[in-house]
Length: 310
Image (cartoon, rainbow, N blue to C red; front, side):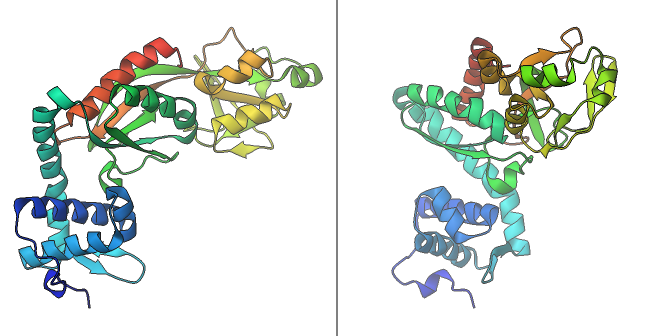
């Protein structure tokens, strides 16, 4: 049986500050599914996180979480609280931030999600540049090629490439990125250089399964159905295989800069317009956007334009 707060006599919650800590612990535990992950997110101990949640249950007189040996689940009361608590905490952070940031600068943690390749190539450096301006800020960057659930994973901001279908989020366009068809000089010497998209049917093509239609490569009004020996879920891996002469890769320009500069791959079908997608800053709809997150989005919009990454 799970313990309630009165099973821990050394912890007696009573103040408003206790309630805030309890709510933060509950939200982090509910979103991550475990006390251990919540403690890591909050920068506290597993034991204290558990005590905070038990304290909240005792304060409210209801059980919020169902504990099992493998994970933590929500009771109906917990689901109701989770639907409202994150917005309340965001409002509180924004209120406190508005008072303190004028003299002290931004502080706290920003949790960011991005795709693996774009995150490694660009977002990590973006956060370092923004962090230099705001030394009291901390960053939790999570790289994943799937579109994570911002609410469930406790993400403040996601950088997403391409279309965003989720209705519960808002998106701010930061720029557009183009795709470029490339191959190594060695491959083209061996197999010939395609002159039209239709020629790709006779070539080895490296398929990036992160693309919405991995086997359909579009060039303006024309498209080609392609095939090849290699299927990867990384634009960077596709470019590396192309550089080793294993076929043609169709990759976003930001994933090609080093390889193009080194001459290990060269553009192909340059007379045709490559696919164009959008880069968006995505955040949850219906919540007050914290000032530090809004500042990061504004900084990213300017930084991307000056970096010429897209």
